[in-house]
Image (cartoon, rainbow, N blue to C red; front, side, top):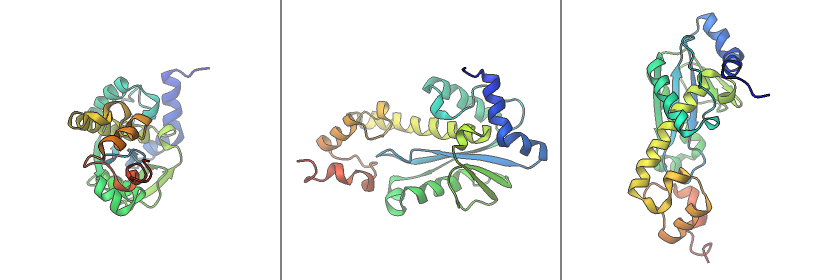
Length: 211
């Protein structure tokens, strides 16, 4: 049976957030978007959400439509006590690998946010200025992490829309940078753009592999 929004919000808050709000601990949720795509930045969102008002449609960003994410993004930005966006570039991803670049983006997102505890979607040992609690599937289990996932996803999708205007041949507006069949074919036809991740696309742009 499909859950109502009220039931889903209760589920999201009672797992971790409610007890922390009641304890008086200042805590933030952190999540990222863009670890898997072949192009663009990896983006992290970080936010300290108040216990009231709860935003009805906050949820794992993957469960929401693009239109709904945009709406909820605005509500999160206007409701959050603190929020931040952090990014790591394709060059940084190529230099330090995607996991370390993701941690860098998370540290940048959390910079200046006065939380003593950070609930993080799965990633361990980020190096934040506070206690870290990694939670597997955290964006589906914590209201604060879900809100951070929406911040990261919407910000990155907007970047991909802008990149699509510069390089329309790759279909970034549709594929968001992921390695779809059409995207890979465009890579083989046109070669990479300056924001493709070299360590992600080597196989697709190697002349031997393209024969």
